[in-house]
Length: 70
Image (cartoon, rainbow, N blue to C red):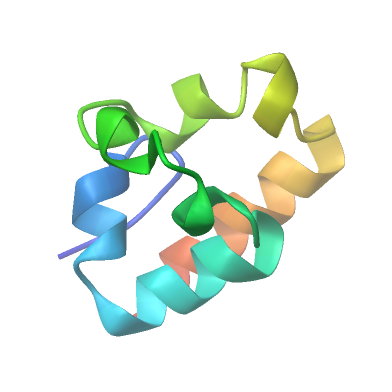
């Protein structure tokens, strides 16, 4: 499976390598009580919320790191 910031959070979380990338950029996300509510969202959508807002550069780096997963 190919990953990107347009992938669903659940798809990313279910893959060990993609989850590690997610946790590197959003370390508190998986420990929040409402985390499972984000599973149907794309990572890009999630990062649009003020609580999880990433800069454009961070979002690009996250996308690049996810796309590098084989």
